[in-house]
Image (cartoon, rainbow, N blue to C red; front, side, top):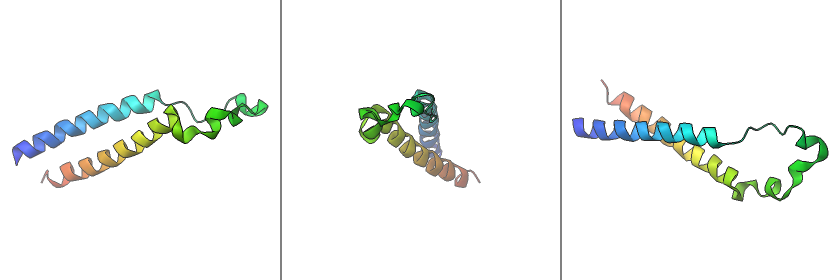
Length: 79
């Protein structure tokens, strides 16, 4: 049982580090001055789900779900 808890803890730390890095790689949500001239309607603005930014958002969602599940499992197993 201690081995499983150690493995889950190491996995939890790796997910925490990956989540921090992925969040820092993402752009801010504010449009800035580009919204005034309509620059948000470019190719990348329309296809955001298939771009690098869209992929980072999807990876962030998966890592957040894993973070929540692992934190709950580690918390339940602690008493």
